[in-house]
Amino acid sequence: MLIGISGRSQITNGIVAGMISGELIMRNSQLRRGELQIRRFGDKLKDMICVLTGCTRAELENDSFRVSNMPPEWNRWMVHYDNGQIHDAKGSEWFCTYDEAEAFRMRTLGKPYSKFDYYVKEHPITYQMMLQEVGVDLLRNKFHPDTLVNALFYEWHPIATESRHWMGHAITMEDEPVKYPTWIIADVCYNNEMARIKKYHGVVIRINEPGESKYDGFDAVIDNNGTLEALRIKVTDTVNKLNLKV
Image (tube, rainbow, N blue to C red; front, side, top):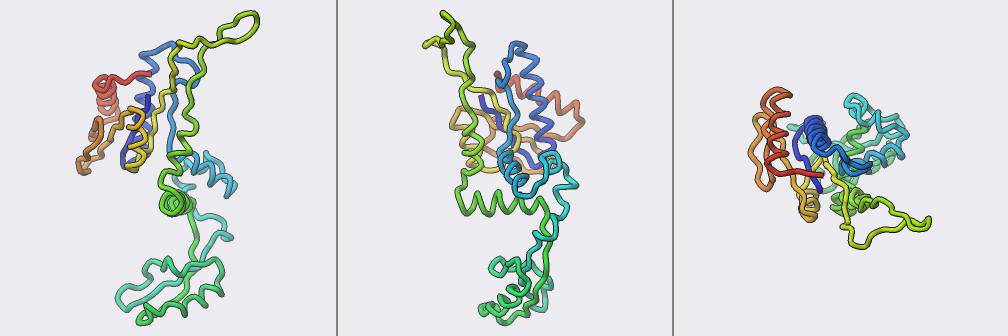
């Protein structure tokens, strides 16, 4: 079974995923290894960033580290404009480079914006920026929208059945049903992620924070507007309502 968790706060999503996992474990004491897992679409992206930058997953999960600047060799230069009203506006996506001299040369290419004054500015990059730009701007928007979805689901394999032996050889009963692990996916953000979960007859739960608008298309909505214990009670009620099982 697939259970998706969608919400603005990734911290709360993780807490709810843990609560659901705890509920399911309590109700099934015979779980085998790997039958119940908490996963995230962003897992492979974070692994990729760790490979590229040399940081660890533990560091990348730390909020303070994630918003810190990467080493200066990752800095980039961007051409900015000043139209007399908006000073130091966002750097132009068309004029971004990693070489200062090249940035000054590119400044002269802004003919469509010749009425503006251009200047060049060096920008440090945070780990969070790299996660966003590689995950969304590059992989999702420019390569394939399902890149991280596919990467995660390539690991959703049937659980190996218990081996039976005959004359020293492991055998599998042909009439045994194929069973997949139960995944609680704790970072559902986009419609295509929800659609993949629904494709395999899963459910998606929305966690609403105070002041948020109501969202449609979810199998259940939990309003996180009280204490942690109140949230736990709502999670238990949702598990019962949706009849969630491993």
